[in-house]
Length: 187
View 1 (cartoon, rainbow, N blue to C red):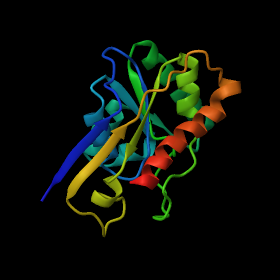
View 2: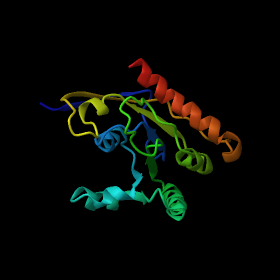
View 3: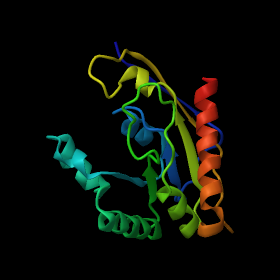
């Protein structure tokens, strides 16, 4: 009984390149899969509430930029901290759905703007990632799950050089969401 990650890559990640990593969010194993996928250093942006989980929370708050999604000031501070990390050459991983849908029939929730705004402002490539099987293998609800393969796909990086936040953010966000959504629908 176990889990076997299988990662398909459109192309290898460039060494010493900061990326904005974005993926669908469906499971508690998403974080572990992202750590397997990226060989380049990155930090997560994650919700503050998870830092209260015993043991996990201890490590979580030391490896993530925490956001209190109910507090606008916290969201602004996250943006500033993420910007600083990118200036230091570290990538950022954001699950742009902003959480996991409680509706098990939802394939992919709408994306929030933060990852796309940061990628454009810092002119770093964005790497869309589709996590196919995490929901089946280790869902957020208690009564499900099964051992087996956990597939992930890194799509081609999307360059942001020349994009402008106000003009391009919404189109960029929706184009990335469509890449992930179409991959999930084909699987």
